[in-house]
Image: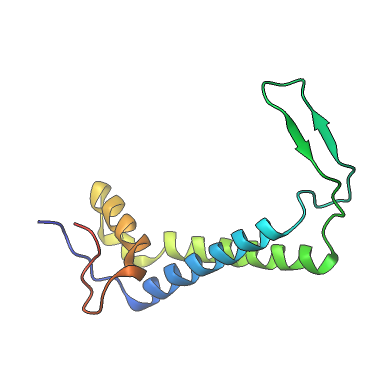
Length: 117
């Protein structure tokens, strides 16, 4: 039988916010031009595969600020979750398994039952 973990609410909330911030950052980066600075497009067929990029207008100051804000928040949340006092009571493989469960806890049904064994 798989172990169950009683994660504190602040740890669950921190993990969920981390997941949301990472999803938001990922979506933003997919929408932005490939280069932060304005650059001409290029095509390079000298490597093992063809690499092509269109001209990039670069990121606006607002876009750069938004990426920085999300990255900073992501870092704060990673530090909060990974150094939470909850982990002090777990050792070795128990800590690894609990951390894996926490990453998927947002998909848990009410009552705290974990979505996988």
